[in-house]
Image 1: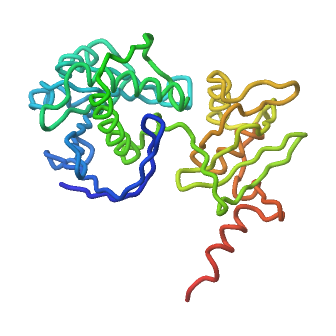
Image 2: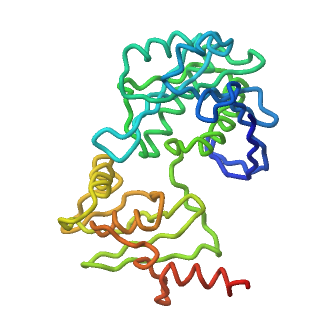
Length: 304
């Protein structure tokens, strides 16, 4: 089974971003779309293997497990609304995954990356591990199981550039898998950006919609308290954002210390107001239009 994906998404790597069309192929060797999946990309010497924990014993003999690689273990939220991850490397990668199969309970699936031409070595995967952990800590969109902070190995300028190029290609595959834990919210300055606000209980929050969700802008304020009927996932999310320093206490309100991407306007509105909310109604632009009205105007009259 194959799935082809094309896109022109922007990704940051070593302080710069690239935007170019590309194709991603997802191959399911056993014909099961939720079983082992092999990720490849146009003009890339790497590949990723997505492996549910339950089938690791059956697929660990594949040749990719005997190569140097970097991996991410992923598990559902635990007392949190943010997914839990562990980032590591191995040379080869297979024995490390087997150790985690025996010793780490939280994860339900893993993805690891190796090169198809043997170009990745131990130093390269150590560099990739350090960079992924740094990005995850900056993004603040996951709970990290890692305790230690690995240092980047000494690579030449050319090897560093090669490793960063490999990293950029890796990052482009994660959104297909629903894993958005390495992407720090990047606000794009654009004349086409249409901002919305929420004003409630003495606070003002600003943000705008993107294809990925809804971004609440740095400096926005949020209500400190929560209504008793707030959904538990919103309450947990607000606690997560405070523990990660995304929202901090400022007198009688909370303040956003960075731009932050929520998966929907309603989640963003709920996090700001401390209650369940309909973001399409609560977010309003400077003309008083709700997000819903703005979207309907952009769509134009219905056809037929």
